[in-house]
Structure formats: C-alpha cells, structure tokens
Image (cartoon, rainbow, N blue to C red; front, side, top):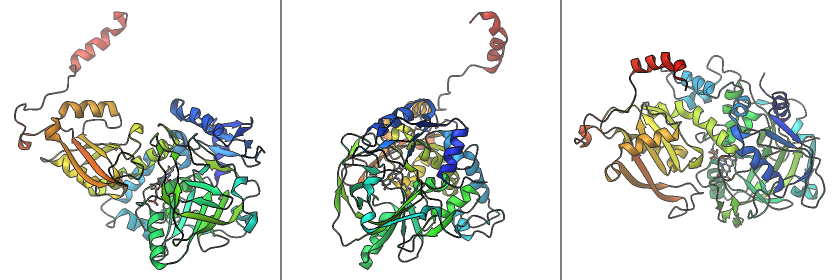
Length: 492
Ligand SMILES: Cc1cc2nc3c(=O)[nH]c(=O)nc-3n(C[C@H](O)[C@H](O)[C@H](O)COP(=O)(O)O)c2cc1C
C-alpha cells in the first residue's frame, strides 16, 4: 500500500527513527530555519523535523506544526517514492522503454492504462468529503499570517511558502501542471508567484495573458510524499504530474475539485490555497531570497497571487523546506530526479553511461557526464544534445568523460577531465538560456555556457603527440593478490 498522505509519511518516518519531534517553541522567523539548516548539514542529511510549537510573528504559538527536512536523505527520498532505492524507478522506466513497446515513454504514460500492470496510474476522483476540505475559509477569514510560514534567512524579503504544489491549467489543452515555485507572502491574502520563465506555470500564465483572462491557481501544501515530489521533477509540458505520481506510487492519486475553481487538488492535502493570478495586474518586486545557489537572489518582477479561499484539514501539518548553501534538502529531491530521468536521457542519447549534478553545482551550474565514446567529437555531440533538452538547456558547465570514469564521484571525474584536456582545444563556449537564478549571467536568464571534453583524445581529433593515450596507474593483479596474502604478517 502506498503512503496516502503527509501524516502517514510522518508516522512511517517516526517508526524508522527518522523523525525528530521538537516541543521547544521555535520562531517561524529564522529560528526554525537555523535548526533545519543544522539538521540538513549533518551527515547523511540529518533527521526530518516536526516542530510542534512554532511561534508566529505576533508571538502566539501556532497549533499547526511545521514539518521540515522530510526528503533530506536518500532513505527518506526512497521511502517517499515507495521503493528501497530510487534506482528501482529508473529500472521500471527503462523497462517501459524496451523496444517491443514502440512509443516513447511519455506517450505511454499518457496512454495508460493500456499497459499491463499500470492500469491503476491515472488519478481518481475522491468520493465523499475530502480531508483537505474539512475546513473552508473564504473572504476576510483568509489570513496567511495564521499559517507558520517561515522566514529562512536574515535578508529575505519576508516569509516564503517553500514547499508548495502550484496547480494551474493550460487554457488550450485543459491539462494541469503542478510546479514547485516559492511564494513570498506580502499580505494576509497575497503572495508573489515565483514561477521562472522556463517553467510550466509561467507558460500557462503567458497563455492566460494572451487570452486576457484571469487564471485560477490552487496551491496544495502536503499530500502523499510522491505527489509532493513530482512538482519538482522536470516533466515535459502536457504531462500531468498526478499521472507520474501514480506511476511512482503504483496507485492512483485521489483528487478533488477545488471549492472555488475547476482545478483538481490532492484530496489528501493538508492545506490548499485557492485563488487567482490576474495577468492584467502589474508585476511586483519579489525577493531578495536566500536561494539554493547559496546566495541571495536579487529582487525581480513576478506576478501576484490572490488567495480567495483556504481549505484544510481540521488538524493540518504545514510542510516546509529551506534552501541555502548546499547541501540542503533539495539536493535529495534533485538527486531522485537525476536517477529517475537517466533512462529518459538515454532514449535520445544511448551513449550516455551516467551523469551527476554535484551539490556544489546547485543543479544548473555543473553536469558531469560519462559516455561510451565512439567517434571523434562525440563529447561535443553529447553536450549539444543536453543543451537541447528541457531544463538541461540551462546547464552552465558540462564536463564529458569516458565510460569508465565514475561521475558520481566528482573528484574522480575532475581528476580524469583535468588530466585529459588541453584547455584551448577541448573547451568550447556557446550561448543559450541560463537559469533565472544565475546572478553571474550577462543577461536575465541568458548567458554563455562551457563544455569541457574530458575524454581520452583520438588521433582523428588531431591529437597525435601522445598516442596511445596514457594508461591510468594501477598495480598488477598478481602483486595485489600476493600482498593480500602477506597483509596480516606485515603489521600494518
Ligand atoms: C524546494 C524547491 C524550490 C523551488 N523553487 C522554485 C521557484 O521558486 N521557482 C521556480 O521556477 N522553480 C523552483 N524550483 C524548481 C522547480 O520546481 C522545477 O524546475 C520543476 O521542474 C518545475 O516544474 P514545471 O516544469 O512543471 O514548471 C524549486 C524546486 C525545489 C525542489
């Protein structure tokens, strides 16, 4: 049975000794963040925390506890996605991609339940009263200051909702998108909506703007953990996150219609903010915000979200995260995506053996890739291919190494790559879209990129001075065996 909701996830974590309850009152203003940062920076990602007595801005103690660092370890991430190891999902996807089933993966996901064993994937309508709508607040009863929304870092522009599932609908296709975009609270019933221009929510916003219509938005906080993860995953446009979440859970997500719009929200959510973004309304200055790059992202213009209703459980839990100097909780969320999406990258570039985005590279700054090199210039072909794929197009530096280099060990990857390059010959610069958070880029979301060919060079690549390419220094096997035998006698 898949985990049904956030509270069940917390119970599971507690049973496994992976949850720490904090009864000491802690302020939503920086204090919870400081405790969470220490937990996230401890070995293996620390424990998940349930802060039972968050102190609100007015000094009162909220009855709504804050759950934080829920996904901040490999084992919690695996539990969230219903597996022992997230590689299991990569294998399931690779199986679906077998050539005996001709269509592409996403087409197949959409054509479910045609494929055996996957019939239970599409979302189901919840029957009866939904848990997320036990309480409905509308009009003046809506007051975001009653929620324990965190201010993470001293120079943040205010409190931010940091783990939201932002649900919008494409006005043309009717398909929903769910993305995780932080929301700066600016008043009792307003927030900014920080969907960056390359993201699904922003694309929907542009379509509603073209129509000159207001756009309904619902924001779910807390649900079953797989559904909480999918808004962070770079699904292609038009793929419903609930469907992907059902695939990961091996059970459908139950959804219910929002109270004030036709958007479908997870029935098991803890809290749902319902409202609208009006594309005719001027944008506002969002930020600064202590971001996952480890730097404050400077203020920039983003749309305003008006909250017209809050629905929730009678005893909701408020989920949050903080981002900052890596590694933080988002490294594990992104790490799951890295593993799960490898078979999909291989669909168009089967020569890719593995790839890794180290924590210090904050996802978009650095991608290490190993390939089975088969022809001259192959490394550059792979870089260009990656820069042409979805959110990979935002990668600032791509380093390509040979198949036998373990890219999940960045030290090994850099050691090989740096030994193998003649910088002028093997490094190429190009231009393209840059991550919105790249403060060094020459323009907003536009900048240069660097590709490093760290593979062994071939004569056909014009490298004839050292051929064959030098061998790695390794001891011979027979000597190793002999020393293994002698080892106990050596007193080492
Ligand atoms: C904790 C966390 C916070 C995030 N905050 C934002 C954000 O504020 N704005 C944004 O555009 N993307 C943010 N992202 C990244 C998006 O969620 C991610 O790119 C996702 O693929 C977007 O989904 P979409 O393609 O459906 O838009 C965040 C991710 C995580 C894990």
